[in-house]
Amino acid sequence: MSRSNHVLEHPEVRLGGIVSYTVGYVLSILLSGLAFGLVYTHALPRPVMFGVLCGIAFALVLLQMFLFLGLNLNPSHRWKTAATAFTLPILILMIVLTIWMFYTLQLRVMPH
Image (cartoon, helix red, strand yellow):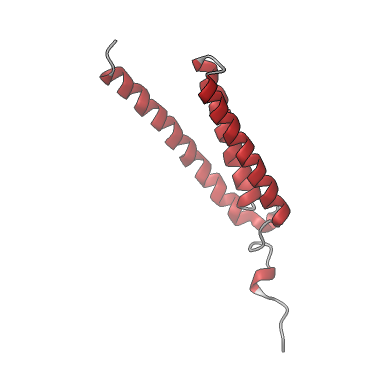
């Protein structure tokens, strides 16, 4: 009567191994260090810096979703994919509205 259908053996529950966590950690540290170094040294003009930092932030989000959260596009992980599909528009909306809020705040508060 022993069943081999253990809860932790389901593909929805299994996460990445030590290799994916280590690679994700190292890449996260490198990308965060790159962003910090660019801001600290003022290496690029402001509009270019903004675009590069947005790209680094987006790469960090994708890196963490795939390597730390274990998201992949297999049919067995359809609930993770569905949750990501609903989360991404909210995340993008939150980022865009935050940028808009600080831009309009700067226009209203800072002297010209």
